[in-house]
Every structure is written in C-alpha cells, then in structure tokens.
Image: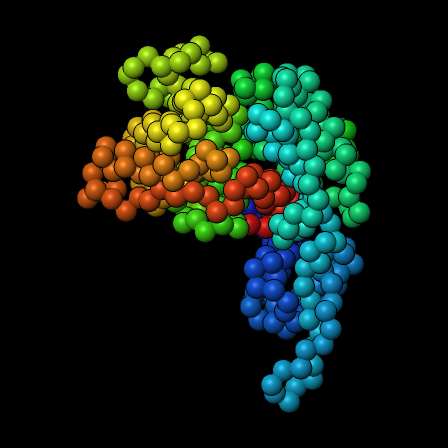
Length: 372
C-alpha cells in the first residue's frame, strides 16, 4: 500500500516563505509597529530571514518604515516598520439590501474611506447583475491606490468558487458573480453569503465569541454560523439558510419559494417594514416583538444542536429593535433547557449595516494575504 500524499510530502521553500510572510503581516496587523528584531523574536523567524522578508514587503509597498525608536537600554535605536494600511485598498460590495446596493473603498485595516450606492429597486436577474458590476467598476476606477481585491456580500447560496447557486430574492440561479466582476474590473473578486461575511466581521472586528450564530435581516433572512472561530458552510454551501424554515403552524404568508409561513415572510426587511406600515406607528413594537418570537421559534433547535455562546442579530437598526431582540431571547429560553443553554445570549450586532462591507473586506484579506 502506498503512503498518502500528506504523510510523504514536504513543505516546499515557497510554502515556508508564504507562511512566514503571512505571519509577519498578521503580527503587524494585530500588534502594530515593530522592529525587525522584535518581529524575529515574536514569530520565531531568524533575523536573516526576517530582514529579507521585510525588505521584500517594503519593496511591494505593503510595509513602510516609521523611523527610529530608542529603547530604554544602551543599545542603538531600531527602525520600526508597520503595514502601510493605505498602500492598497479594498472594494467591498453589499447586495443584500432591497433598497440600495452599497459599496465602499476600505483601507487594509477596515477603515471605510469612500462610500457609493446604486438603486436596488426593480433590480432583478440580469439587471441586478449589471448594477452590481457597474458599482464595483466605478469604485475600482475611483480608487487612488491599487485595489487588492473586491469582496461581495450576497444573499443566497454561494459556493467556494463565488458562484451564486441560488438567490431567489435577486432572481439569480447559477450566476457567476465573481467572474463577471473580475472581467469588468481586472481585479480579483471574492463572493460569499452576506450572513457569513457579517459573522466574519464580528470575529475580525466586533465583540463576538468564538461560537456564534449571526442572523442577518435584509432582502431575505439567513444565518452565518461561526464555530471555533471558523465559518461553517455545510455539505452543500447552505448552512444557515434559516429563511425558508417554516416559523409556526399557522399557515402564514406565501413565500417566494412557494411555501407558506417561512421565516422570511415574517422577518425579511421588505415584509417587516410593510407589516409595520400597515399596523400603524403605535403598533410597530408589537409587530417587531411578534417577528422576534418567530425568530426565536426557528433558532431554538439550532441552539440545541450547535450550542453557541451567543446569537447576534444584524440588520436595519429600525427593525433590529429592543422589542425584537428581547422577544427572540424570551422565546429561545422558553423553548430550550436552561441547564444546557441558559448561557446563550441574544444581542444586536455592534457593527450595524457596515458589517457586510467589513466582512467582505476581511474576506479579501483572508484570501489575498492570508490574514484573519
């Protein structure tokens, strides 16, 4: 019997160099400016190798020298280096909203520098694709620095190639969004589910624990599942598609999928906004509380199966209200056993509507530079 490729394989020099390069960038991203000697000591990379790595990264424009730092001891001053956070920019696009497609230029550390929008009203199928591609191209063209990559957050099921397998609310089936954007801009494009990217932003920038379920309320409803700090996609890239779980036994409204009473019919932003308008301003909190109960009903078995630390709800601030969050929390704890799941808290995302843009940028950093 032959040996497996993993058991018999050795790391190639280029693999080691790629790993060391990522380690240097990650250390600087997390900890801030360091000298070459500091970096060598903290990463375990030899000083000679570190000097070469830093030289290469300076040449690529990813690092910059900040000047000499004098330490407390008698040694000579050391040159500090750091990531040049604006040497390259990132384009983030969010197509999960039903009113506007939102885009931004972001620095490498996630600062939003420029914002742009395109109307999403009436956009479906090929027209929606055209507007998204146009928004991405305009942001790339307006960037004063090279663009490292484009991240796109979309509702629906997305495979690891960036192919949108199904996004019913956009009229997309088998749409190669990644290739379309890349062809129009000449820039690498990475497409992922909007809830997954919002969860990624919570991990990278927000206040989340390592195990969370992030519920994203937008054009539809979905969940990003973060376990042991990693996004879980499932066997068919559809983990977290809770929007088409029937939320109750009362034969609710007709859903776009053809069933009645799916969670999206109660909780998706267009439906929930319309329900509040129909009920009148004085009844808004009652409508939101009812929607929160439906969400808690759907999430209870998810919590029992996954045992997350917390549930994070992300969406339009006028919809993700105290009433909705509290009703979700109440329903979950009424339908699960406190001895097992009493620790699970429900909270609003601290990142607001920017979560998807920040997650899209984090995805570009992850793929293009190996940074998390």
